[in-house]
Amino acid sequence: MELLPIPAFDDNYIWLLRDPTGRALVVDPGDATPVLEALGDSPPPHAILVTHHHGDHIGGVEALLRRWPGTPVHAPQDARIPVASQRVAEGDSLAIGPWRFHVLAVPGHTRSHVAYHGEGLLFCGDTLFSLGCGRMFEGTPAQMHASLMRLAALPGDLRICCAHEYTLANAAFALAVEPDNPALLACSANARALRADGRPSLPTRMADERACNPFLRCAEPAVRAAAQARAGRPLVGDAEVFGVLREWKNAFRPPA
Ligand code: ZN
Ligand code: FE
Image 1 (cartoon, rainbow, N blue to C red):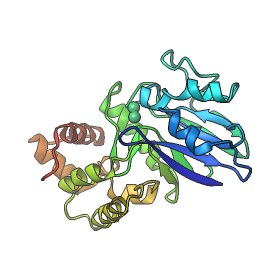
Image 2 (spheres, rainbow, N blue to C red; image 1 turned 180 degrees about the horizontal axis):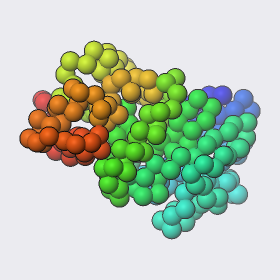
Image 3 (cartoon, rainbow, N blue to C red; image 1 turned 90 degrees about the vertical axis):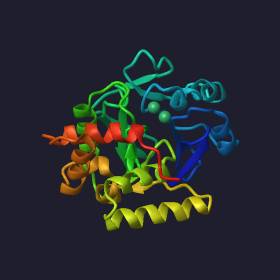
């Protein structure tokens, strides 16, 4: 199988997985144009997966269905995703072409956000980014933190297919939180080299995220200490540390 991030808009990736016959799985097609270009006259896709309702993840579904009518569209139960043909929920197992994926409910960025895990891959939409995480539009810090901890418990060699290229900006923030983390220094140097070369910094690996991503490291003494210094008060649980980090990141402007 071939895994391909298709750049869309300013910083989105639409992920394509292709089997040896060229049939694809398309994840979060916010825009149809780059997908139609990438697939050319390939046979029809096996399916489309949707992680959440935002326009930059579903905006291209209708045009893909016009090109390939009847393609199954898997999406969580949410009235804001009217283009779905099959609804998915926590614990579901999907057989798609030669592949199998499991559905995890990961509320926080939005309340109905899901992730798809299988084939050594994780399609996690806007929940987990390399060295960062999505904004909490519809969830509490406790919810979002719990969702991220579920993802962090998945195998270390998992390749994480995030929906945005945010790694360098995330690295600047992560380094403000943990300036002395050697794994983080190495990951951020690696991402800078990839981007300087015009290549995606993704997919990232779960083991690297566990070692480097401050939002997965709220239980680490250094991360907790940085969050407490930022908040100016003692923080009780990991979710509270997470909430302070998330607000800190919202206000963070990388040093010029
Ligand atoms: Zn989103
Ligand atoms: Fe997005």
